Length: 249
Length: 298
Image 1 (cartoon, rainbow over the protein chains, first blue to last red):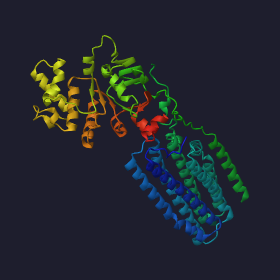
Image 2: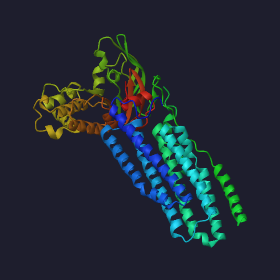
Image 3: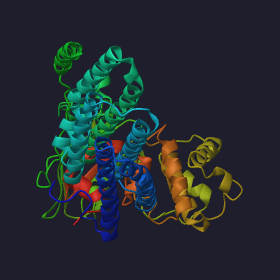
Image 4: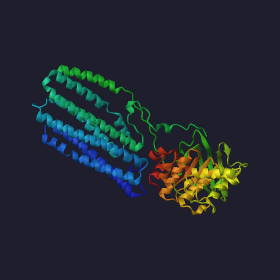
């Protein structure tokens, strides 16, 4: 790409509007990444005020989503974007939904943290929490990479991230098995174990949302829709037009 | 306790191996064609071609206006030709019914066929050709005669009606197909020039239809019309597709997107890209096409 995706219009204001939408989306991405990290830190440090903070600032993520959506609707209504401008507006609109969900999951982790330390009678065991850190590291790492790929509009990297994730799926499976083992060994851990399962499920969802965002980056840059490839749709719609002409001259 | 956890870990490791060997998913994608590349990108050929153009070059004296254009125009399709001013789209359109013959110093080479007949062949008579391939212009140009006579003139000189009753029927059917019948049926003897701009343009379309064409060429048919009249003509184009093939040159990209099934993008005499309208407006393959339709040109 010789120039940034949003630039070069004869109408300069159009550049500025698209650029602002991208900026809002990146700001939102950075904000939810920070939310997930803060939620995990609060959990690790048993810091209940930090956990409360994560829940309290979720409204800011929601406000950003509303603002960005409003600007996207305005660009569609007034500029009639086509080609890569259209893909950019639609792709970001979809990515925003995933980002907002990530923010919700972060808030959910913070609420589970409050529950673990406040309402359960005892402190959760160290071994039980270990699985959260493994999943947390994978989820935040993936999200960070996806947001960087979005920032750079790096379709190769985004595609790789969108197709990856087996490591995270495997870690999720193995965490569930380990937690099941803990419950079998000591029934008193069951309360905390359920909380931990909910948290790692949240982290697994965050990973899925991050991969969805990566798919949107690929769509924005290349126009290839790579959603649901794992469900058997092996050829990308539109790829067929790359085949040689059927009719000889 | 530890032993149990360890054995759980081992089962997990195994399942991890299973997931990693799943078949790799192939994602195909084509890189955007660079601005410098002037070969036509996309689908120039269709299964059922009404008109076939092969290696068409047009010169106005020294000026090379159309450069080696190869393109099929399918049955019952609306094909839109877009591009910046001077790109050759109107020149190309005019080649399709030899309207360029009237221009001094204009030379056309290559072959253009309609239903397998070479329209530039020596034996080709341009009068029936222009009935077969009709044309609607930018500014409505009704004859300074009655509404009835505007429509009846063509069928009469081409001998399409045996008697007055047949001629009346052709006039009525043409006006109906052009969506104008209800508006003019009570004032058939009034001059065509007394109609509104939009009505005049539909009168010209009715006049084209009256001589039973196969192809209708439209050169910016809505550029002199207001949005309501434009919408009526666009709706008409969509209805006419059932019976005719339509090639339309337009400066309005939104119009091309709205009315056509295929879009061809011209740039400085080259046919840069042609493809399904949907694909052109969501994911054009040539950088020049994208620059133009997104408003980044120049």
